[in-house]
Image 1 (cartoon, rainbow, N blue to C red):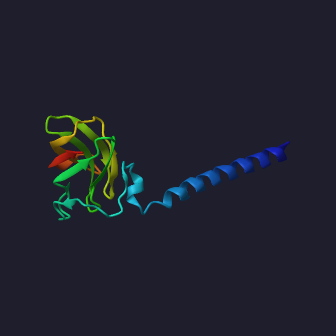
Image 2 (image 1 turned 90 degrees about the vertical axis):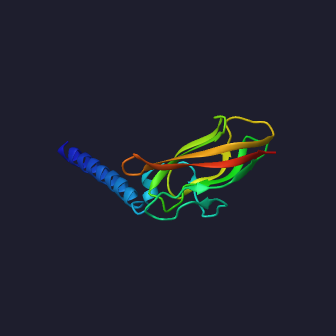
Image 3 (image 1 turned 120 degrees about the vertical axis):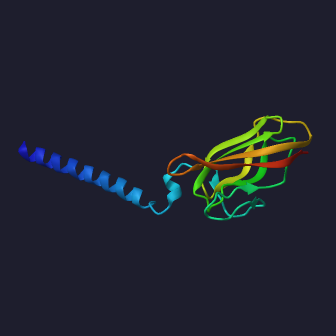
Length: 159
């Protein structure tokens, strides 16, 4: 009976050590990739964009900008190039609104190096030309405090 208890104890110890090692080493394998420490919305940005970055000084937040977008009237999924530049030390919350305040799209927790090629519009609007804004709020990754932001004004063409 004592022999069975020893064997059972040894098996349990082996399993606990194995689970600990698996958890420890799986966490260490991604320790060099700081993006994996955060849940970012969007896709890992591939570096291609038609947007301009308004400030590339590493002491400041880089804000992507553009002067116009064209959306397809017949689809709620639209092609865009919206991203958080990789050199930033903040995550971004995006709000795309018409000048009258109509919310078209929003996304939070977009970390540096992540962005969107496609977005799903919340409200369909009629064919035409509209004044619109991309409101960008930025938050420090470590403290979650708001650090900067911007409003990109642009013309939205619905075709």
